[in-house]
Amino acid sequence: MNEELRREILGDPDFSTILEDFERGLEHASSVEEIEELRRAFVSRKGRITELLKRLPTLEPGERRRVGRLGNLLKDYVEKTVARRLSDVREMELRRTLVEEWVDITLPGDPVPRGSLHLITRVIEEIEDIFVGMGYQVVEGPEVELDYYNFEALNTPDWHPSKSLQDTFYLISPYGDYPDLLLRTHTSPVQIRVMESTRPPLYVIAPGKAYRHDVPDATHSIMMHQVEGLAVDEDISFSDLKGTLEYFTRRMFGEEREVRFRPHFFPFTEPSAEVDVSCIMCRGKGCRLCKGSGWLEIMGAGMVDPNVFRNVGYDPEEVTGFAFGMGVERIAMLKYGIPDIRLFYENDVRFLAQF
Ligand SMILES: [Zn+2]
Image 1 (cartoon, rainbow, N blue to C red):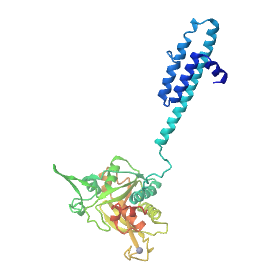
Image 2 (cartoon, rainbow, N blue to C red):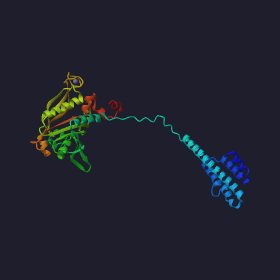
Image 3 (tube, helix red, strand yellow):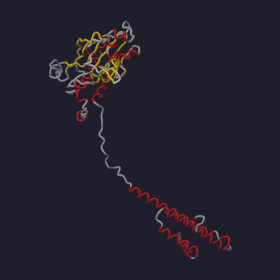
Image 4 (spheres, protein in one colour):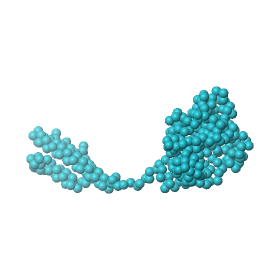
């Protein structure tokens, strides 16, 4: 308010009282509520300035103009002062809140240890990558399997020792036994399931868990991971099998590795072979890892037995194929020099974090 106006207002007894009361009230009003209250007391419909202006019609013209002008200027002053004061108080309250509820976002947080994929998962993905690069598809199947898919469809007769109660987990419940249900002993049943639902050509790998009634030691576990593969097409020969598995082995263990195929027997392939890779420690000279032989066995493989094709409705005169299977733990142990299979399952982060 400029000095001239202030002098004029203070010269009028009614207006000067109002101005002094307002300014004194403002000095003591510290909260938003108190300031709002002050505003209502002076400029609302029943405020003191409004009441004063209501008397205008009763005044003579000269006085009416003077009182009207001063009243409106004072009203304007009160409203602007209140608005400015309200915004100051609100800002102060905001600052106080910020100080009281301040959180230092620059302080370091509680550390969250960074996890990583388990070595077994990593090796499975490595194997998958190599085969997917050759055009294979990744397929999965159930771990609780029917006897038919685990043994019978794979040309494994009832008298076969791997079917014995000592070697396989059969499912038993208080409501009765289920002689047909078992924990799969290999991932081969997935191959049967895929062949039943698909027509050739077929190029698949099946990674997953398999279960054996083994006594755990450095190289045996009741649960382990396998990757099995199957290729079915016209004119697939043993040389396709050799080429595919040599390529895989060198990608997995190094280009300089030698690969060897040794005749072997599996019920569901004929002819069958075990696949060896030249020892990664001694490079074939003979050491403790390879027990002096210079070779490490890494998987079994063979041409699919025609009986297996007949079981799934494929014509063995039209298609041929090969199958292979490897233990993921064994591959990981050989590749990374791990001496005991149990290390994979003990969940000791000091071991797992190395990979
Ligand atoms: Zn060796």
